[in-house]
Length: 109
Image (cartoon, rainbow, N blue to C red; front, side, top):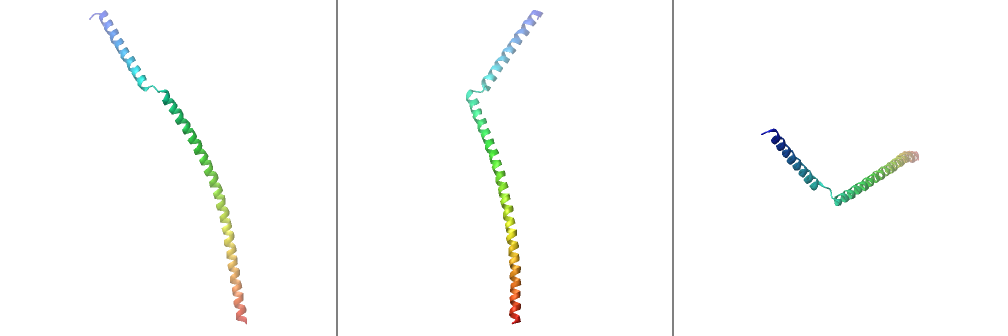
């Protein structure tokens, strides 16, 4: 094999490899091409995701507000309960004092 045949054989091999590579690239792009309907579907999905995130944020804000309201109401109810318990304790003490006073009055007669 002389120099000219070697160069010609190498050129043919390189050309064949180039053609196979180009054909493979064309096939890959042909099968992985994104269609317009897929893009539209992705747009709809991203819009739905965005709306869902906004709804989630609104729900979190509502829950935080509601939690603060409920905590405030709980604190108020606990304060009212303490006041009622103090009043009941005082009323019981007063009732015992009156009961003792009445018993003294009965025993003195």
